[in-house]
Image 1: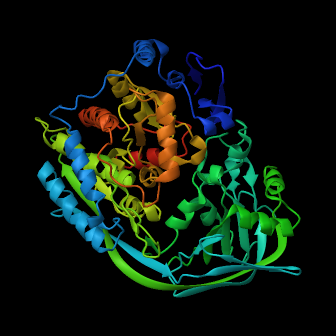
Image 2 (image 1 turned 60 degrees about the horizontal axis):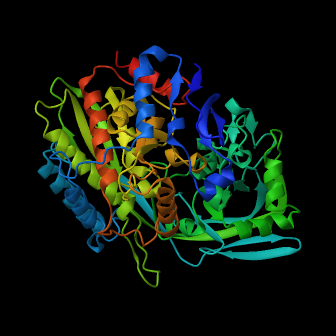
Image 3 (image 1 turned 60 degrees about the vertical axis):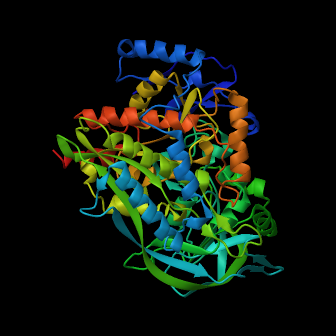
Length: 599
C-alpha cells in the first residue's frame, strides 16, 4: 500500500515514516516546540486502495476549504446548545464534585448527575435496566515521606518523593520494598522484534531495578527510519516500560523524566502519582507487576548516572545503538512502601439509543468522567476540578446523546454513550469495558472519544491523534469538508497522545477508534494565537488545581466538534459495513480475527 502526499505548501515541511509510509510532520523539531506552526493543507494522503479519480472532487473541496475561512457554528441551532454544554461543564467542574475521584463522595455525585442527564437526554439504560456498569477497583495509598536510597562504594544519596522521585506499587500488598537491588540502565527498555530492537538482549535483570529512558529512539533522533521517527510508538509510553520490566523479571523500574520526551513537566508527575492510586481488582493482586514502579527527576537521574561515569546525554546516545547492551551502574536501590488498601466498586455510566433495524451493532461515543480528586496535602487550592480534562468531554457526550435520541426515525444501529471511570489512573474503566463489553466487540462498529476539548473558539482545522490509522478518518474527512475544516496530524506526535486516552483500550481489542478535536488554527485569531493557547493550558492548568471553569470560554470549536462527530455517527449508523484499521496498523489482525467470528 503506497501513500502519496498532496501539494507541498510549506518549504520547512519534512516527512517521517509511519509504519514505513510517509506521514506529514512539521519540523525542525525545535521550531515545532517553539511555535508549533504548521500548514493544515499538507495533511491529506491518498492510499492506493482508493482511486485518485474517485477522491479528486473531495480533494478539490478540501484544498479550496483550506484557503477560505471555515464556517462558524450557529450558536442557535436546535441540535446543539453551547449554553447547555457550558452549564454541564460548570456543574461537573464545581467544587461540589470534589475533583471527581473514583470511590469518593465526588463519584457518588457525578453518577447521580450523569444518570439524571442521560435520562433527560432520552437515553435508555444500556446495562439491562441500569445506567451503571460496576468497575471493581483496588486503591492503594502509600504513606507519605518515602525516600529512595541509592548506594555504592563511594556514593550514598537519599531522594525524596515529590521532589526527586515518585514511587508506587501496583501489587496489592500492605508493604513492598527493594533491598539493595542492583541498578541497571536498560536504555529505552524496549523489546520490539518488528523494529529489530531488544534493549534487554543478553542481560539478566531478574530481581534488579532497571533505569529507563522515556519515549523511544525515534523521538531522540527524529530519524524517519527509526521506529516511527518523531511519532511516539506504544514502546515509548511509560506504561509499556513497566509492563516490559515485569516480563523481564525486574524487581523495580524507574523511568527518567524529561519534559519534552514525556510530554509534560515534573509537576504533572508529582500530582498524578501522589496520594490514592487505583487499579483494576485482579484475582492475582497484580503479583505479575514489578514490586516498585516510579519516576526519577532529570536531576536525580543525572546524578545517579554520573556516579557510573555517564552523563544523561551520553547515556542516551549509547541507548540509540541497535546493539546496545544494558549497563550495570554499580549501585543499588532501596526503598520501602507501606500502603493502605481498599477495594471498591467505581462505575462506568452507559446510556443507549437503540437501533431500529440492527440494534445488536453498536457505535460508541465515550469520555472519561473522573479526575484527580482532592489533595489535602496542598497548602492552597486542594481540589483538582478538571474542567477541561474532562468535564468538557463528558458534557459533550450528554449533548450528543440528546441529539441522537431526538432523531426521527431513529438510527439503524445502536448508539452507546459511555462515560468511563479511572482514566486518570491508567484507562481503567475503558479497560474493564473492553474486557466486559455490554455489546460484543465483534459487533462494535467504532469508538469515538472526547477528551479535553478546545474551549478557545471555532477553528479552520481538526486535529486527529494517530492520523493514518483507520478507515474512520475517511468519514472524518467528509464531515470536516462539509464544515470547511481540514483534518491535520497532531502537532506534537512525539508526546503519544493517541495512547493516553480511553479509546486506546478499545483499539488494543481491535475496535477501530477515532480521537479528534478542534485544531489550533483559530477562525478569529489565527494559528499562532491558537498554538499559544494550547501551550498555555498544558503549562499552567493541565493536571493542576487551576484547570477550572471560566465563564469567558468560547464554545465555537466544541459546537463544531459535536456537529462533526454527529455526522460521522449518523453515517456509520446508516451503513451495514464495518470500518477497519489500515493494513499497516498493529491493531488490524485483532480486528480481522474479531470480525471473522461474527460471520
